[in-house]
Image 1 (cartoon, rainbow, N blue to C red):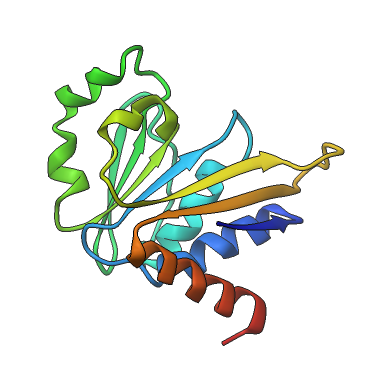
Image 2: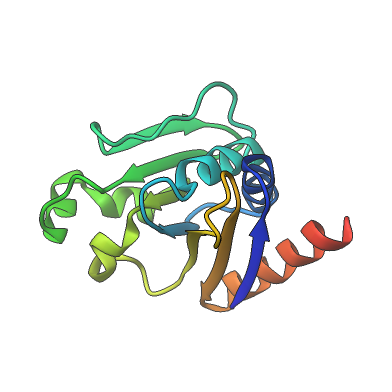
Length: 160
């Protein structure tokens, strides 16, 4: 586990961008956090790091947005699901185990359907509630994601 603080929206975006540069086919990033904690901002950064051009928006009403960068980016927002098994209707396996990278906002709503290995990222507003400050906790599940977080730390904090 690795925890850091982003003092601004730009820093949250930058952490996502750095992470996006490490992602490979089949990677799954599960985002956890309340409304307004920066999940979509972080995802925008991931998309930038993957070479996605254009506006990345939260797919709250359509549930999935697909973007093309170096690899396809599948951006899920499962906030509106009332039951976790509703994810089955979306054919989630094709995305989670497909040719692209999957980022899931509100991943806590579908915990039973997440793959065994993934990178969890918990975003929280910092105390006191600063306008843009966020705490990000990276929780790797699996060796690939442990190494990914080690690389993120190296790049984000040493400039390598």
